[in-house]
Amino acid sequence: MKYISTRGRAPTLSFEEAMLTGLARDGGLYLPESIPQMSHADMRALEGVSYEEAAFRVMRPFIGDAFTDEEFRGIIARAYAGFGHAARAPLKQLAAGHFLLELFHGPTLAFKDFAMQLIGQMFEFSLKRSGSRVSIVGATSGDTGSAAIEAFRGLDAVDVFILYPHGRVSEVQRRQMTTPVEGNVHALAIDGHFDDAQARVKDMFNDFEFRDGVRLAGVNSINWARVLAQVVYYFTSAVSLGAPDRKVSFTVPTGNFGDVFAGYIAKRMGLPIDRLVVATNQNDILHRCLSTGDYRPDGVAPSISPSMDIQVSSNFERALFYAYGQDGGAVAQVMDELKAGGFTVSQGALEALRETFDSGRCDEDQTRAAIRNTWAASGELLCPHSAVGVHVAEAQRSPGVPMITLATAHPAKFPAAVEEASGIHPPLPERMADLYERDERVTRVANDLSAIETLIKERIAN
Ligand SMILES: *Cc1c(COP(=O)(O)O)cnc(C)c1O
Image (cartoon, rainbow, N blue to C red; front, side, top):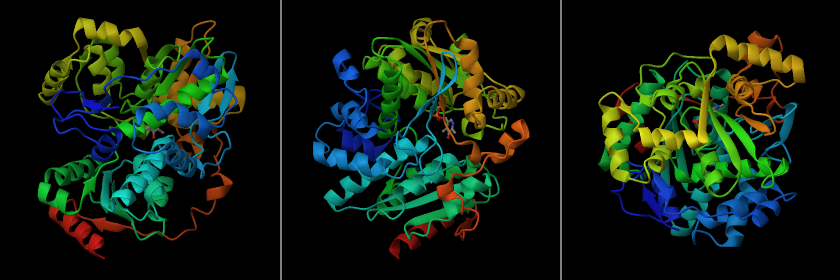
């Protein structure tokens, strides 16, 4: 299996190379050259198997010869062993025909654990085999950083440095980043906003001397291996509702478009998905684009679903690649236009997107109402991101087709917003109930590239 860039001008890579590289050298994102198919018999055979076994069968055709079957099974087993639910991704019923896929039983209580835990184990295996080490550096507004730290803590071949904006993440998110005791974990609180943290990480990747010197690696949501890990739960949940002999639809709380794009891959592999609904909060650039064809960032308004507060949705480029008939030149051109302020999707490409995707928006009051109403109707306490999904899903359901809304985080990760909306204080799961008592370890850093680079070099030398 070979991987090609969405912009058509980077070398094709193996799965392992694409995973370790992240971004393609032409600025594009990697995608498989062709998409493996799951037959109806393959899908029916997923019924009743463990999540880990389903993960093996769905992902195996994509990884080529990166790992033997036995190695890959071991990687998957270690990735999901720390989840707090035997089903890993349990499906709950909210109402007639409407289901909630709970993706928040991983170690940091958000769906990002599904991909990050897997990529952690894959990195460790690959790097140990080649005898090399890397430094993972990432910027976070909260969930990605805690998931990355949790996935890489204690691994031998990796140091992990996460920059988060000082004073601007929730207390649970901060403590998840600052309380791990392992020496390879480095939480850095930068004096600035998330955009500053992200800009300094980009600067580090563009400083080639530094980049090569510390062997920088990225695990942000454009990494293909992360998308692939997320394809699995579309299959497990749909099969449990009768697929492939019955169609299902999904609604996905969306920011960077990684999670919903994984659903698109599942559909292209043969899963009978009727509609894939992109749910946005008040930062609705994707909803506007899918409605009008116009993609034009106009500033982020902070919301109570902060992990979806985006202007530039990086993985949308992958959907555009298919919508433009796999024409890398066309994708490169719209991405250049984006740098200059925005772009308009061609009529043909917009129709192609709409063949699969619907979209909807949920404002702050509607988010709070969805938390309150869902609690009253079903006893299910939603985090604000999942509430955006449920609100949008209710407007988009069609009779006879079950709707599965993805619940992307545990309510206890956003206790203030949940309590304000519902009057209920969501408790942390038992296994992390002492989070508030653990010691914190964090380094304050100035918003200054050379100071951050010096710190990283010193830490690696020790
Ligand atoms: C990251 C995140 C999202 C958005 O997912 P994308 O793959 O970026 O679209 C939604 N909800 C939560 C809780 C998240 O952490």
